[in-house]
Image 1: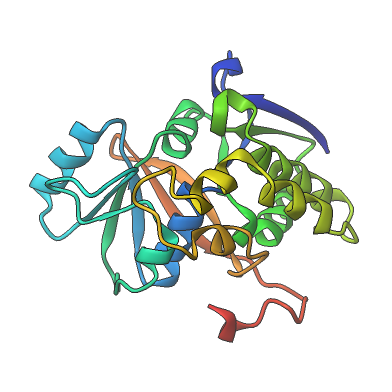
Image 2: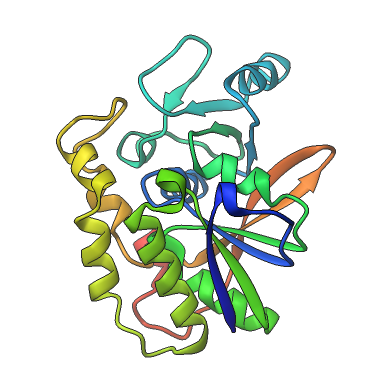
Length: 236
């Protein structure tokens, strides 16, 4: 598989297959939302759009980056979200990088959103589709976020080489600027477990596929059966 790694600003045209990576924390949070029972996640264009959707659908759960804010139910933290029962509910998510990256490739034929927690399932779905090429959107730090690039490179490698070891990729992510900022409390809306949760490899046995539904970009979990013993149902 021919893999390209681009920042959001480098996307000049919609790729056929896009894998949008935001490890810390948008798509780790999204995966946890599905694990907590969410039916779907609507990726909002802006905070105002997220609040407008929430106003029209008061039962939806609105999530944003940074500190708590009026109108939003919670913040973009896996450590905080894992204690919320989302059974059957819709989540509206707006983040600084992850949702922006996904919306930037909304015209692609296949859009996957990923982090380390769904890395193997994402790679396996790419193999299932027999993709000749894929564009990996490195969302953080204008395409320079090493946690996102490391995850993207790992997924790309796993899509073609099942024996790839994750250790070096996880090390890079753990030493990234984002990991340090989260661990040191530089960023707001953080739980002490966020970095560890973002670096938990293959926590969930599903991939996350985004499609346009009635003018909204909607993310859904797609089960990807695994032959690996490490992906047990009791782990999520």
